[in-house]
Length: 430
Image (tube, rainbow, N blue to C red; front, side, top):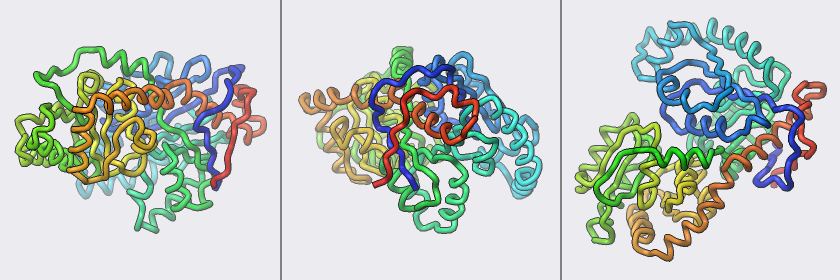
């Protein structure tokens, strides 16, 4: 397995003779970080260099109500499955309401009508694009087809989800081998891919998520929830298996109990464990000072108005909320979990890292940022540079370099008209 690394691409890329045509695909739009990351990419890539398309397997109310309005002008949206029965089964599955007969019906459709229809639709759509980016690896059964490069993107720690599951690792290795490259969000994920999949994957690409910094700052200036007292904020899905709000509440209660700070805690997000998380907030003894906003399509005003952002997660892919907080000039305190926060926060230079599940260490870090002006100033000084690493220009160079390198392996492909004059630098895995 080769690992191509484009952390910073030296030199300026020459403008392509025609925009590179890239199709991004996702199974559906809910209210998760993957969907937000995809919107970030679509907004960050300049139209003079990229012509973008968006393929969605299943339409959802969230896409229509929240995300469609965030799409840049000119992006063509392709829906793979418009069959009412298929969409209904998919919706019931997402909501946990798919009974035994529903699961059987979905399985039958998935193995027959669904796959055949998807194959025909993607074949037709792909003809208009140079590169296919499978943003959530949901087209694994079709990857490698249609005589054009495929990039599959993993957004989560492989180790957190796959260690101890050899049968699934073997199955995914066979599926991932169909892609020209599997993109990961940071070095730690690349190392996990190396250890779990070995040479089964053709190439691992380092491709952190992109953000549109100016758009984040613009949206942060829009009206948002207002709070009476200074506050710290956590933005995360209410999923305790991953996000570990219980440790955050213990740390926050300790902070107040010891009189080290006088701030409220705002929790932005929703998810399957909301009742459990709210009960944990009450059990901390500080329930009156912990405020739940629910899901916010625009959390940026709340983050921008906070004293700091805190994330007590057990594992991440990248941790986009950390990057967004840096772009908004907010200090960050985060658990040192696999795989993204350490890299995003530059080994602790752009934010404070604490051991996972350690409420005492988390309380100390919160107090440090809230009460030590010099420490706070040091963190804030490092924030802009880290945010820029994930901004549009740097992300454009990374994706353009990878696409150019992959297209070069398809002689005669019309997408080679968009190759830049600068070759991609590829570094073998150490």
